[in-house]
Length: 248
Image (cartoon, rainbow, N blue to C red; front, side):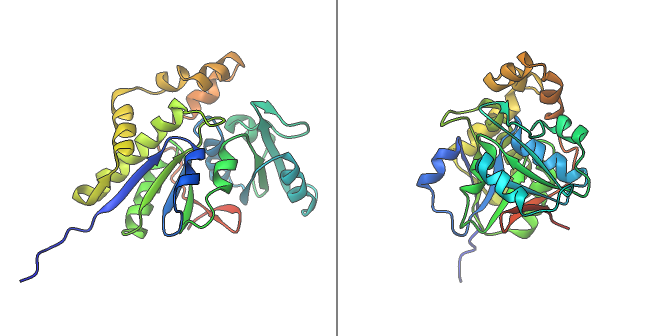
C-alpha cells in the first residue's frame, strides 16, 4: 500500500529585486510588487481601459518604444529617483488616470518597479501585483498554477528593503495561503511578510514607511491612501512579450 503524499505549493517572498540574481527563474510563477507606486499604477491603468502597459528599464527605452507607435495611441509615464521624467505623465495612479489612458498603451518607466519586472525573464509566468488586485491574483494562481513555486518579488528601492512592498507581499501571501490551505508551503520570508500584514494597519503602515513619508511630503498622501484600496480591481495583468495585458 503506497503512502499518500500531500502536494505542497511553495510560496516565497524576495525582499528586494536585487535578490533575483540568486534565484533560478525557470518554472516559477512570479508576482512583482511595487506598492508606491509602479505596480499599483500599472494595475490601475489596465483596470481603467489601457490597452496594454509596457514596462521598460529606463527613459531611453520608453522613448524608443513610443517612437514605434502612432501619435495619440500611447502615453509615456515614469520617474527616475522620484522625479517625473521630462515630458512624461506623472507616474502615480490617480495622476496618470487624469492624463487619460483608455484604449491607449502606457509606456512606463520607473526606478524600481519596472526594472524588477524586466529582470524576471525565464519565469513560467510574471504577474503585476498590488493591494488593489491581490485577491483576484491569488485566486488565479491557485486555480491555474497548482504545482509551480510562487515567488512574490518586492521591488524595494535601490537595493534597499521597502516596508510597503513587504506589506503588500504579506497581503498576497495571506490570500494565497487561505486558498491553498494545507498544501501551502510558506518560506520564512513569506511567513514574515504575512505576519507584518496581520499586525499592521493600512493606510497607516504605508504612510509611515520611508517612501510613504516622502510621497506625503510631496503632496501625494491621497495617492498613498488610494494604493490601500484592497481588492478594488479584480484584474490579472500578465507579462507576455514584454507587455502587460489583462487575462480574460
